[in-house]
Length: 188
Image (tube, rainbow, N blue to C red; front, side):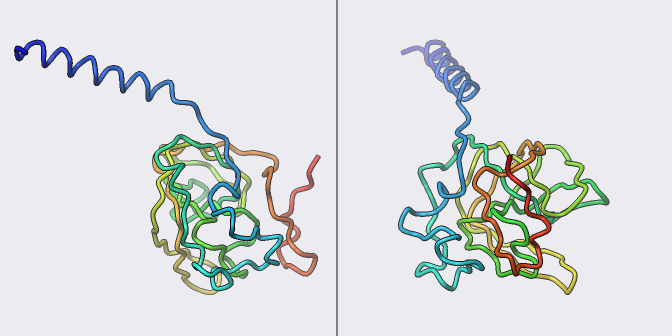
């Protein structure tokens, strides 16, 4: 095959993969999709659900979602912000997670880096995140009222887009004795 034909074949292959990527569908996932089916849901394990209660410490990740474009709703806990502009946050499945409540297992935390800063009025604001999901453990420093916490997340979404939502479809309702119950959103 001549060099021109090889170059043309490579260009067609690259264009085809770019076109396929552009038409890739977004998978709307729930928090249960990020943990193995054998791992108890937070409601069944009894909140607070901490990694120490789980045999693998919540480090078993869902590799079948790797590099897929997903949309996941949860609660944003800012990691990197300037005033009300947020550049990076942890997406968690319930309000109060990671701050004054034990941290969810890593496979229930997503580190989100935004393509564009997002204006956030409060911590634990319900949002929907869209982007390519990458499994892999990452540690983030979270500054909370009583100091710094290091939080391990099992997934990342970089260059994510984010939109505010009214409710999180599969949110965990906090027990009545939780100091964070005021953050629970009423479902319609």
